[in-house]
Length: 154
Image (cartoon, rainbow, N blue to C red):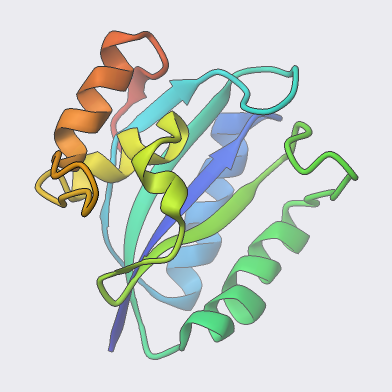
């Protein structure tokens, strides 16, 4: 069984779309844990604030199969539209951040919308370059007002 940490975000009907994504995800794999939901400003373009949540899943699927079979399905069902600006507002966005203890998305260490939710699940994970824990990194971002607690896992 593989383990993957996924980040789910939305800034269009955010709460409803995150709830729907979690229901769909729960139908296709085992959700082991989820972070708090964090409200963060849009990143890379103007737009409404995002809600973001990190989830730990267990699945027999490989990383590329998670993308094609789970993530694509969720994004299609929730009518994710892709635009030339990849940071445009969206109904749902699902990304693999860590797969089997390998950091897949290096944004984990410097993007507040990734670091803060994942830190709820892996606070002691160390940045190999700075030696700082993910909790320390996330706390600095929270202190800067880049993420605000929204709610516990839905």
